Image (cartoon, one colour):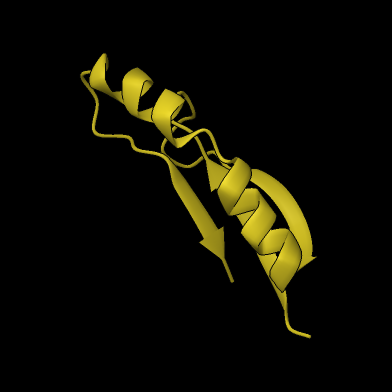
Length: 59
């Protein structure tokens, strides 16, 4: 089964700041995606003046 190196970036992070989650398998990657607080991040983004946005990277 493939593994992915995973990191996330939330709205309140600096543009070059990520939280490294390490390597996960496909099931772990899907769980991270499902558990990511998209609605909360969109609400937080709506109140900001910067262009930083949340991000999930799977490499």
